[in-house]
Length: 266
Image (tube, rainbow, N blue to C red):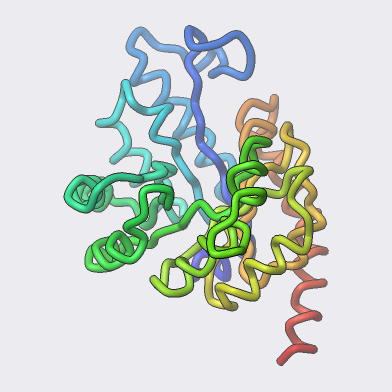
């Protein structure tokens, strides 16, 4: 991605702004709270985007956290772009073609650059073609980070292969732009290597699970084009800018290792 080179970073921020009325822990701090919930979400989101901008190349707002404040997403996207980053909508789109087309229309209208897509209903090829007409990237859920994904994506097979490998082939065939891949405990390096081998070197790996989920950062070295997501550990910290910088410094050494690996291959 162009933004990765310009920012010298492959960090993505998961923007999941939870209102204090939604849950007890990891919620928007009181200093951002306003009379209107939409203002609370917006104030917090804009602050996180600004604090993270020096060390990140993309921000991924999650639709589920903006359902009560959808009109503000345009302003969130504008802020992301103003800070020189890519805007990815974490929507996990999954439906019949005409419904997907409607979502793609509105995702484009809001100004996003890409969105996440769930392949469980099929339609990968059709969705990618529709999205590319709108200059939108499609990032397909390929091996998720939640524990239950092990049963569905690894132990379940299609044509004698684990389901995650079947999805990876669909990513390759459809020319989708990226894969969502977890880094959590059950995800072995060989699984990540299998996906990389199938999809090729041009596909972005949106890697999830670093932080509270206990994801293994070392797995990043098996990927050619990583985009590593940070979420709760950053956005709900006392000093998001300081925390994301620590991750940035950590990932820089891994990036250097990857570059040496690529030079040997080339």
